[in-house]
Length: 231
Image (cartoon, rainbow, N blue to C red; front, side, top):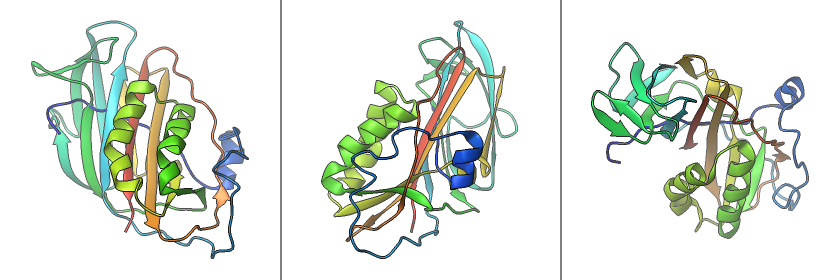
């Protein structure tokens, strides 16, 4: 993985979350939300490993001192770089996203872990493997990732997904953010956390379509993306 920096994002949940947040009020009937076939409804809530949550920092001024703390309900198995305080990275970041940590430069902060919580598939998307690249490109931009972040997300996840008959995909909200609590100081103006729970399936599976809307990237912005191929 090399020495790179990390920061990421996440979205999914129940209808009550969508209504309560006014969230995901985007395109409810896009190309990937309505092509249902006669199949059993998905019932899958097992959990694998949280892979490559990466955290990007975009302050409004160069050489901004930033503390990023991660309170994780699970077992952290890798950190790049290692924390230099209790559950915390103390770094300096520039407006272009470059992060300096104890004299070393990173593109993002990186962590992986085994969660003590699971993800839900109440809503999401069943996407043919051959359509996964176009699907991710559309949805990741809608969730607020820029071109570089989207490309890095797809570079990591797409090789695992594109040759499957279908992929069940659900972008997590509270189930992820409540289990992997991120605290940043100074307080950012925008926080985008994209976390994709998914698994391959041999058949198309009927699922409630997930609603997605764009995210704000104004001021000091923190972005995180990661995922979990659930067992």
